[in-house]
Each structure stands twice: as structure tokens, then as C-alpha cells.
Length: 145
Image (cartoon, rainbow, N blue to C red; front, side, top):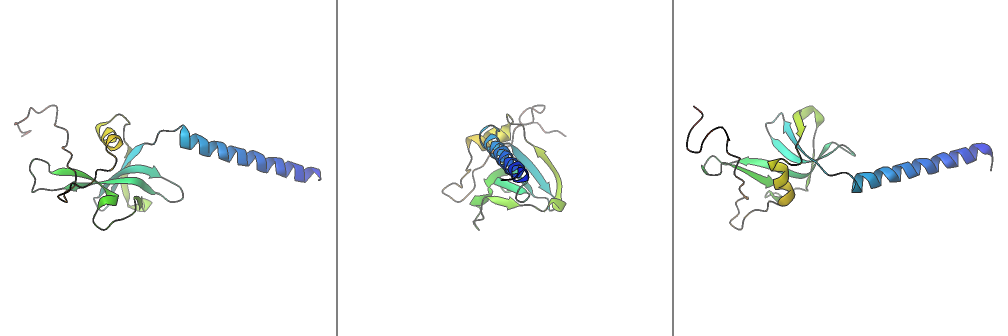
């Protein structure tokens, strides 16, 4: 084996070890974080941001608004649980993203998603309702007006 082949072989082995190290580090030593992504269409999605092999979200949740229910007008639903049965991955066109932000790992929504990851529909067919947090500056029963 000549010198050039030995150098190339060592380089390939080192690159392979670095790649394996990165995969192990990402898999075991990073905590998954949730992101909020708002699209031009007005849709708001929450999930774990994926940049490779394509831009999108996995473990996707969406916000549903039900103006008929005055007590719980906003609900959070697992994207995979909608009636047409999509996979739990949403590929997103970057040009359609208006804004996106990383959710605090100790925030209310991130904690909800960690403790109740499925947000399964109730037996009656309605999605699990999650009450939005009360405005701490406004006492219950009073309006902001």
C-alpha cells in the first residue's frame, strides 16, 4: 500500500468516527426541543424541528379554534390524530414560514406536550381540550376593555 492510499484510508476512518460520534451525541446527549412555526396560510404548528433530510416538523401538533365552545375555545390536537390520518411528519416549504420560535423547555406548552404526548381524541370524537392560560393581569370575570 502506498503512502497516498494509507492517508486516504486514515482520513476515511477518522471521518467515519466523527460521524458516528455526532450521531451518538445527538441521539443521547441533546434534549429534543419543541418549536412553534407560523405559516403564511395562518396555520400554527408545534413540533420538533427537522432540518435534514428536509425542512419540517415531527411530533406535530396543531391549534384548533372552536368558537361554539365558550369555555374552551382553543384546543391542541395531535396532527396524526386528524380524521384523514396523516403521518406524524409535516414537510414545510421554507418560503411559507412567516416566523418560528423555539419554545422554552420549562414553558407551559412544552410541559403539556412532554407530559401528554398523544393528545388523543376523546371517545365522543372531540379532541382533548386544553384551556388557555388565564391572563395574570386580569382577574377572572373582568374584561380587558
